[in-house]
Image (tube, rainbow, N blue to C red):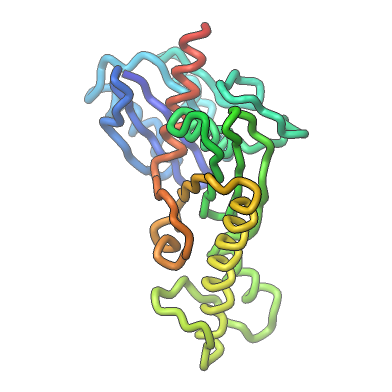
Length: 245
C-alpha cells in the first residue's frame, strides 16, 4: 500500500492506494494537523511503505522528518521522472499539480488527445496529445479570485461568494457580478474547449478541482468530471518511479 500527499497553503489531501491501484482512503486536513494524521494512518494502515509528497506550500521540517523516517519518500519536483513526454518550454516553472494531472490522464486515457481543466484557485488548462506529448496550456483566475478582485480593486462592489442561481442579465449589482463571474468563467471554459476541438475533433475533456462539480452543469460541452484526478496522478508518478528505481 502506498500513500500520496498533496500539500497546499492551508489544506493537505492524503490518499492511500492498495496494490491493485484502488484508492482505499482519502482525507482532507489542515496542514498544521499533518503529523497527527500521519500517525493515525500508520495505525490504520501499518503496511504502508512508499510515500510521494507534492507541495505548493511549506511543509514543516518535523513533518518531513517523520515522513523520511517512516516511508521510502519521494518528493514531486520537475526533476522527478514521468511517463509522458514533457515539451513545456520552462519545465522548472511547471506547477507540480499540473504535472500530476497530466500524469493521471496519460495513464487513464492512453493514445488520446486530452484537455484537462482544473477549476480551483486558478483555472488551468493543460493539453496532452495522443502521442503522449504535453505542451502546456493556460492559466486564468478562478471563481473566488474573480469575486475578490472586483471587491479589492473597486470602491463599492461588495465581496460575494458564488451563487447557485445566476441570470444572464443581472437586474441588481450582486446579480450582475454573479453573472460576470460565473457566466464569464463558463463561457471561457466552453470557448477553450471549442477552440481545441477545432484542431482535435476527437478531444476528451476532463474537469477537476474544487469548483468542478459546481461548474459542470453550466458547461455546454460533454466532459468527464473527476475530483480525485490529482491524487490519482500522484499515485501514477509514484508507481512509475518505483518501477524504474
